[in-house]
Amino acid sequence: MAQPRLFQGHLSIRTLLASTTHRIFQPDSHKARCYKRLQFFSSPRIARHIRSFSLIPFTHCPFRRTTRKQLVPENDVIDKIFSALPLFTNLRSLVVHFIRLTPRIIAILQDLTLDNFELNIRGHDIWQGLPTEKRISMPLPARRVILFNCDANYYRTPIIPSLFSVHLVHPGTLEEIHSGPDGTQFMLIAMSSSPSAFRSLQTLDISVDFISSPQFVPAMYQCPRLAALRLRRSETPARPLPQMAPIPSNILQALVVYHGPPLPVSFATGLRYP
Image (cartoon, rainbow, N blue to C red; front, side, top):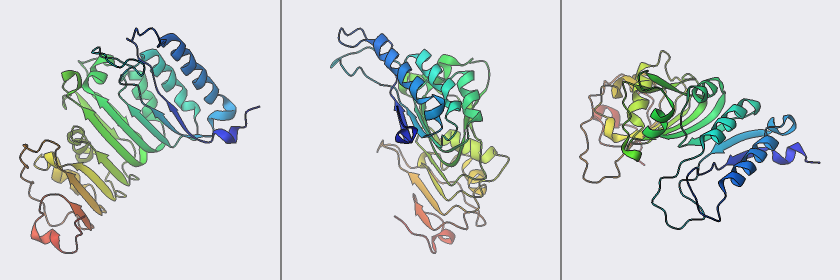
């Protein structure tokens, strides 16, 4: 008989490819194994011991060396996995990459209580499963650490801030926020418009490309205890460094570690530059 404590810890499920026809790879059998694995781990005796979960689809066929066909995860598998997430009552960490967003998935995420949440999405993932005529707000339900990025270039599907946004479900308890180059704009909008300040936030790691945006300084106002600020350079060397928006002297008072373009002299005293 399986002992539940043996399964305490991390569960990772690699979702399937819907469009491969390679004679060795059998999508139906892989799907069946995935369902069986999910059924086992979501059973009452096991589910309460799962504390972290990763859902990362294959981006290429593991048995096909060369293919030019875009391969996508099977949406029915994703739907079943998300339907099972509320069964993991002690889930604290969730990693989700490249899944098609639907109203049901958004509703499930909104109700989760996590310590750590990592989300990486593409424009295609958003508009494939959601109505384009409505504004979409994506919940980021972490209490401690958030990692967020969105790839607007994949499938060349743009992500429009007027139609898509993210919101931080627990702003008052967040300790770290990390956002990639394509996610920083959405993160700054969410932070600057949050009705509650980020009073526990210690670390903010974002792209330097948006330091001139109108949301940058208002977002900094929301972080009275921010101790470490990292502004990452773009991976494209030819892209010029934007001009940082003027920073009032009454914000970032707790900052001690800084990585980015030069700050005004009033902020330089006491800072460490890693």
